[in-house]
Length: 398
Image (tube, one colour):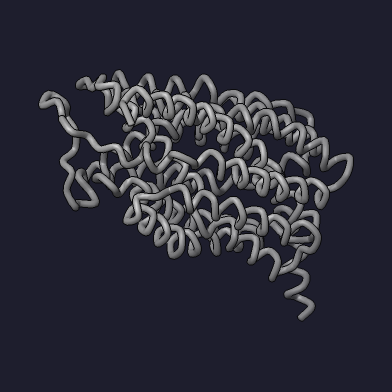
């Protein structure tokens, strides 16, 4: 098959990849934003929620890394994305109608067994690289431009999230959580069939190899090293670890806090909509800063964003000033960090180690989340946050 034919296939697949990304996040918002509210309404305390988050850390560390490594060895992201369509659907179904320790743990296991974001990110970057080979547009700064190219596709996920959040909030307000979660599971099944069609011809694209490399390009050597820049990775982890602790302590239970201050499920949906809407300009800003300067600056901005938001959550927002939740969504830490972060992982980790690299990063960073969760659990018990007093009363009765 000629280069022009392959380029045409890549162009069409990129369009489908954008559509898939849009609906992937449209569906994911149903449970990712509202699941904590559902658990809390079923008398699962904030302290217990932090405890379940600890289980997520362990599952990611063991299983997600393992499957990401297998994905790299196989040079195949497609099968793992497809499997995750079904594991996510089954996991959401388990939590939809019955909330107890067993169903929660099954949900936690099935929705964290595979690092879906990792596989999709690796796939997008690989498609960008194959298009680069065929078009022969290699330049000295093309590596940095990849962050911008990635943002063009991933931004469809932000639009999907922004569109799905208010719809999910309305459906849950009107028809209840089980109905909305049932639609979510059905959506993943439909997405699985769509991805089956999308994956056709992908293997042919992903098997394209670079025949000639411009000597002026500062590309990484194709060797068996996992890490090319160890100290750079260490610095990345320190920044991300600080960020993750702050994220876990407040933002991870933001939806419960918003409900306790008088917000409705529709209000929470609008929050998530604004959050994703501001990802759009921030993705481009992040990739632009990364391309012109260095990826470290967007990461530092993310830390500043989360610090400002936490200070507002703790000291400023009250039931009378609940609208400040909406204004704070402008400071979307994910939007400013993610394009820069994915670029950094692609630079720091060697060839055929991209998925493992992202997964290792995620698992190490959620270890900082482990610390944040332990701290959050104890604070929830001490200050009776989000129904934690119910757990204390149970303990006292026994």
